[in-house]
Amino acid sequence: MPTANELAQRFERMSQDRGTWEAHWEEIAERVLPRTSGQFSGGSTRGEKRTDKMLDATAALGLERFAAAMESMLTPRNGKWHRLRATNRELSKIREVGLWFDDVTDILFQQRYRPKANYASQQHETYVGLGAFGTGALFIDELTGGPGLRYKSCPLAGVYFLENHQGIIDTAYRKFTWTARQAAQKWGVDRLPNRIAGALESKPETEFEFLHAVLPRDSVDPTKADHRGMQFASYYVALEDKQTLSEGGYHTFPYAISRYVTAAGELYGRSPAMLALPAIKVLNEEKRTVLKQGHRVVDPVLLAHDDGVLDGFSMKPGAMNYGGVNADGRQLVHTLPTGNVAVGKDMMDDERAVINDAFLVSLFQILIDSPQMTATEVLERSREKGALLSPTMGRQQSEMLGPMIERELDLLARQGLLPEMPDALKEAEGEFEIEYDSPLSRAQKAEEASGLFRAVEFATNFANVTQDPSAFDHIDIDAAMPDLMAINAVPMRWQRGEKDIQQIRQGRQQQANDQQTVEALPAVAGLMKGRAQGA
Image 1 (cartoon, rainbow, N blue to C red):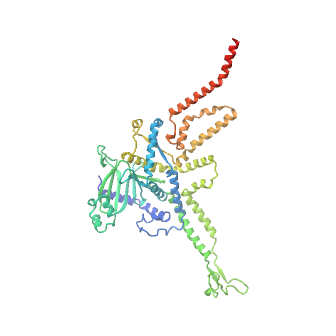
Image 2 (image 1 turned 90 degrees about the horizontal axis):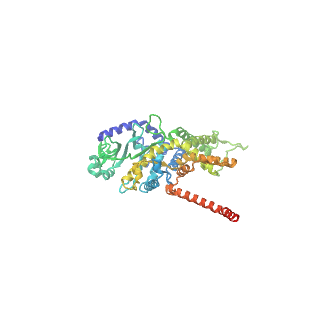
Image 3 (image 1 turned 180 degrees about the horizontal axis):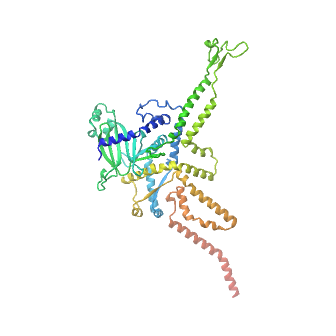
């Protein structure tokens, strides 16, 4: 067991190692996500203005649209964006196993989207952090005071993490601030350091820094039912006093941490905002210049001879300024040329286009700008979108959503909220895989479906021209239909089992045989009548 001093020292090293990152993040926060500015520099004051360095809102709006796009393509609130199924395909064909996985999926979504769980809002905040800073962290734990799940998006300013030898995040340190009263509610007065306990009596709302460390346990004792038998150790430490407040553990890693993209040798992710930061800075300066020029156009600078009429000159509407023109009507007061504001606007539009491209706004604008499309065109556009988004959004499925779902299943199973597993699945030790049914996943799979449709279309044309139906012999519809229903997210309970399908086909064959018999009866009757007459 590491001591509180060892945990604090390790945290200090992690904090020092990312100093350059924090300067970069603070620069982005000031211009893209001003509500978080000051968190990385330690200079924020609650309630202060934080938009001083953001002259144009294009990047901020692009970030919100990016988060909305991530949610709509990966975790839409109005649909089931993933399913569970057995790793063994033969087990997946067993109806009882498929129904069990359908029930578990239903329970997952029911618990995840309960109001107390607060998943939707916290996941959205995680996407915002991902777009701004390149790294998002979501904490998943049991619901306090009852069965269920709870979620908390952790600001990057307080989250530090490490990878194992396989590049998987398995260590996380989170620094947070609580008042003395909150600390007493969590751990009790007896476990608090004297300094915090003393503040509890005189100034209970005084804030102190704490540290939550989660790391792999060096030696797991499977015979122990307490935290010593858990894969991950958990420690809460009073940071300034270097005193351990509690020790616990987790069977699964409680943080789902994902990076947008990473550079070689770097731990933290890089974001769309980092890519667009030069354009954001240029746009802000262009906006500053255009504002000055626009001010001069609307309220122009006046030029006059040194003995002109400006001393008594009035700029009020309807004012009469005698002496502003000479006897010939020539103006004696002129405006200072202000330059071409339209050129400045065009330059700003160029930078806005770059920013919108970085935040994927332009990509999602395609379907909006082309609403009058056929179903085939929509399918092709979806396929193209899936191909463009899969390298970046696909990483969120493997780094964030996959570990999150495994964590959820572990918590729900230990709370007894999952149905009993079928015997066939028990024999396979409950091995399962996650099949994503989000709009992104369906867009990625659209290539397979469109390929089948093109093949069927070709076979149909070939058969019509040549009267040869042999092209259809290459299409195994029994293999294709289950996959097509999976691509289109058809629930297992809406699908017929193999026994039902065989019964339907046998009935259809029997009906065809009966029809042939009925159609043949007149001919048989005529033949029998002819034989009788011949006899």
